[in-house]
Image (cartoon, rainbow, N blue to C red):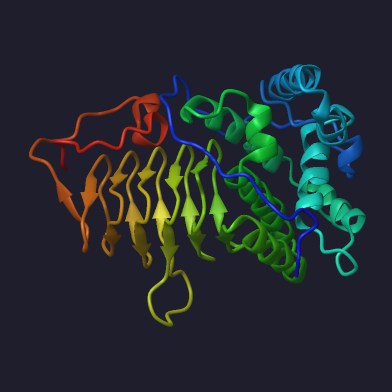
Length: 312
């Protein structure tokens, strides 16, 4: 079935971040996304991320008249980031004649309004993309064009529905996001904030996987199970982890905080904190004890994929 939008834009690379982004204080919200008060990214009365994104959208619309209606419909006419996300995702994920855009927008908007943590995490994700991705100069570009970000926000809405016992609606969002964005995340997976899916194509995350905060995952990564095992069967990824392109982490294994998984690695056993693991099957590399890193120095934030001489 064809989506309402036929094509999508590819993404990006990575750059050093000077800060980390985590779940932030609660913000009030109503039921409908179009009338919701934004989940403030600053903890105060304002919403710095949404204000900055709108200013970027206005600048782009002024510079490119062709984009005025596009930016107006999806950003500038919307009262909050949650409302804009519901409108944008529904336009991407609807199926003409089968899954109407208006009904899908209402579903997404209600899910985001009922789970304000999703809005706070989305703001952290936008900042993470801007600060870690050298190709991302503006958050509005991430919001509109980066399929990794959009797939993750569709998952956040689907996870909210899954947690309410609405598995059919959650699986619908998973299926459509997988078809449109090429990213397959089971709605039961738990994913933290400040997440960057770089390039994103082919990322697969299983039902019982857990991903911490400030994690960066490149394209082609699988966080999967092994065989026909049921129950808690997927990886647990700690804060600040970097997982390189094409890596597979299989089974209920733990990737410690600040670990680095090399491109193409196949991880079948636990990886201690701060360790660099490469190869098939993956093994730790290095000779020295890993130093303690500040949160902003973790590989998931710095995006530094070079080989490390440290091992625990």
